[in-house]
Length: 236
Image (cartoon, rainbow, N blue to C red; front, side, top):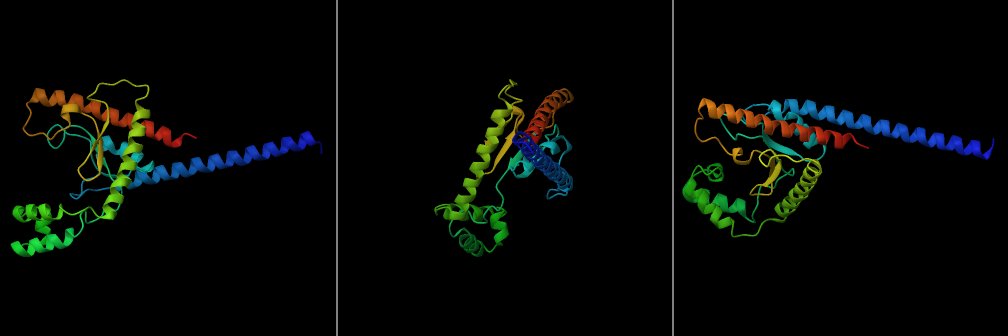
């Protein structure tokens, strides 16, 4: 066999091996994506409600690319927040944020003669307020600081995807998706501008019609992000 022929066969073998590896990776990705879709279809919240249809695709995309979602809403014109949002948080949030938080809550619960659960949920507000005031003087636990740092990494990664998403796109500021940080390290991806707020009073027919039109635009932008993330995930 000639040297040139040997090189040709070796190159062919390498290309075939690489091709099989790519096909195997693509298959793994497809299986993972479909598995996540099935799992999201089964998600329910504390009230037994499933994930809203208009935001389901984005939930799948976020989870598959490693941005774990914990709550979401497609937005409504008659209740809740009138723009879609997805909340992202690192898993395994520590039970205690502050050092000796649990002991302090138990002490305050005994002082007021109420349950620990009532203190935590602020059902007995005076007890809750006193407990918060006392344990918030302490330093945060190491576990909580580490969890917060994991959230920071997730936030930076999310912001990176949004930066790429809008690299060659110009959209209205109300429609543009942004990241809003919560009080304990978790954060949300949402749009809506002034519409990103809870509906406090019933809208008249004209107001509800106009809000519904804006809400459709907000939801469409979230769907576009889902398609963008899908493309990013399946790109070589």
